[in-house]
Length: 255
Image (cartoon, rainbow, N blue to C red; front, top):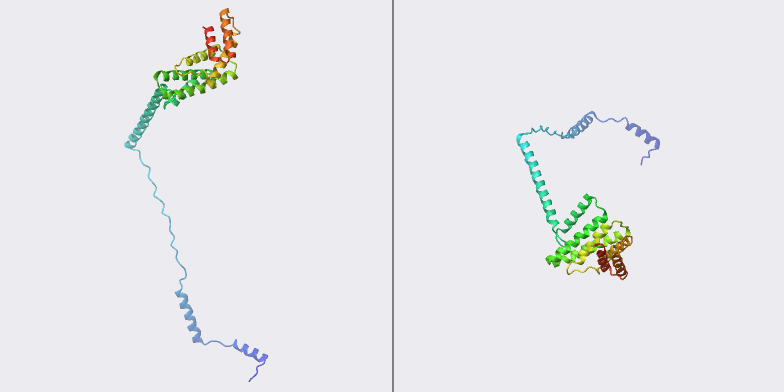
């Protein structure tokens, strides 16, 4: 076996660098490479979508039909507003004659509050007027025999009597005329047939507040002997808790 030294192997590798391929083979290889490059597309064309602007709208000219349509639309609105206004007036008109327990009675209460605000009534005057209205409602219900409405009417009176009693107890009232109006309203309430509310806690509190105010006012007034005796009787009834009877005695003095 022929042994090759390292030096000889290096010399043989150097000789490989000097080997050149044949000219015919080199040309054939070059032509094959160029043919493959032509088969691959150089670039890919990408279609770009160019947005087409919307055509500008021409300004629409205003014709006679457009004007007529606008006029008719405005008239329809005016007619609709008029109808609604008549309905509202009609509802408020019907509500005036309602009593507690009726469907439109809340509208009547709103009307009363609005009128009081417009006339500038004080809270005391407003409460007195409202209580008087509720007492009149109860009297009308009892007169007409509308028994289904009586509980609602009594409930309204209790609420207003309680509010008015609190107002009288917390504020010193120096208006004898107002106190007299309350006393007359309570007298009307006592005269309503079939509805004795003198023992009702809310109404009783109002009786007490009114009688107490009336006694204090009469004690500052010059009275005849007969009036003094009536006042003493009213004070005795007040001490016994009989406020309705005490008020009756006071009303006799003020006649």
